[in-house]
Image (cartoon, rainbow, N blue to C red; front, side, top):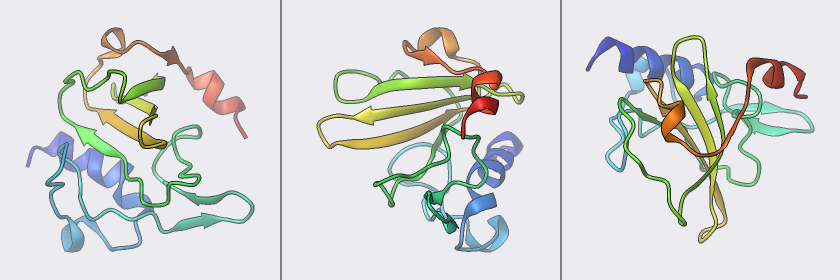
Length: 136
């Protein structure tokens, strides 16, 4: 596995996972992406619920979808259509694009992480670092 993928899994998935460390727990996601398929959010905040500890505000809350996991992709491949609608996108300091969206047909949210700058390929609202800093 490439170091950039391994580091992304550690940062975005392992930091808030209750299953263990990367070295003892990593299991390739067999459904989609290059991240960990056994990731499980184990961090709870009173009054908010479960969160993804390694994700910034706005992208870290699970809400009613407690089984959601962030899906990591090494390259952008257009998965967005009427079944998968991106809502927010954010380019972080590492040059990764975080996308929060909704699957209306299933009434479920999703989190996608692209390990490249693909902001210009995704049509939705861009969230800046200032927006994230002002969120509760």
